[in-house]
Length: 381
Image (cartoon, rainbow, N blue to C red):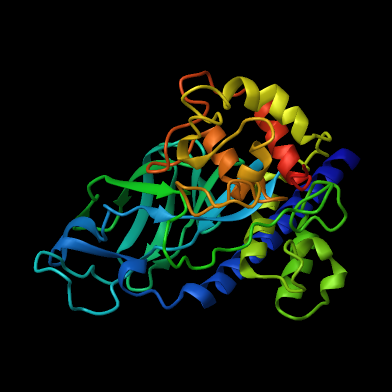
C-alpha cells in the first residue's frame, strides 16, 4: 500500500511539472508573437485550398528561397542557428493572391506532417520538435491559424550549409484532402550584403551550465524557467538568475527564453571545455608550413588570394585582416566562429572558395581545434 501511495504521488508530481512546463512554453510562444504577430507578405505562409469549400490544402509561399537562420547560441563546440519566420497562417482576408486559391471553411483543422528531414535540422512547432519522417503537429483550426515554427539548425561550430525538409499539410475535415509535398531549404549560411544588417549576437551559456541553468548543474528545471520568464516580464531582477541573461545585457530576451526552454526539453549542451594553450609558432610549424605555405598555394611567391602564410609573414596576413572571399576577417581575435580561417578549414559555403588545404586531405579535428583555441585565446603572436 505504501509503495502504491508513493507511486501515486510521483505520478501527480510528474503531471504537475508537465503542466507547469507547458505553461512556460505557452508563455514563451506568446512573448515571441509580440514580436512576430505583424506577419505580412513574404513572412507568411498562407494556407488556402484548391476548390471553393473543399479540395487539396495548399500553401501560398515562395519555396525557391531558403529560410535564413541566425546564430543564437554556441556551447561545447556546437552552435544553434534559429529563426521564427516565416510562419503558417490563415489568410488575412478573403482576397486570394491567385484565382485558383480559395479560403478554407471556418472550423477546418490543419496539421503539418514531416515527409523527410536532414540530420542537424529541427522544426519546432508549438513547442514540439519534429525531427523525423512521420512526426506531425496540429497547426490549428481556421480561421485562427497563426503559428511560427522555430526553424533550428544545430551543427558543429564553424559548420555552414543548406538543410532540407519536406512536409505536407493534412486534415481530418470533410471535403478537404492533403496538400502536395513541399520541399523547403533552411540555411545557416549568412547573407553577404554591402551594408549588412546586424544579426543576433552569439551567446555562450555560463560555464558549468547553459541558458536558464541558474544553479550550474547542467540542467534547466521548471522552476528555473519560471524565474527566467519572471525576469523577462520585469517581475524579478536579473541578479536572481544571471544564467537567464546569456548575453549579459541585463535583460532576458525572447530569444534567451527560447534557448532556456530548448535546454529544458532537450538538455544542456556540454559546457565549453577550457582550451589548451596554443602559440602561433605551434600553428606555423605544425599546420601552415606543411599544408598551406607551399608552392602554388600560400607561400611567399604564390600568395593566392593575397595571402602569404610563410614564416615571418603569416601572422600579419591573418589577424584583423579582411578576407578576399567573404565579409569576415581572416582571424577575428576571440571569435573563431566569425574567423574566415576556421570557415575555410571546415568547409566554406557556396561562392566562398573551396575547403583548405587545397588538394590535400582536410585537417584533422585536433588540428582544427588548435586553430580555434588559438583564436579563442586572443590570436596572440
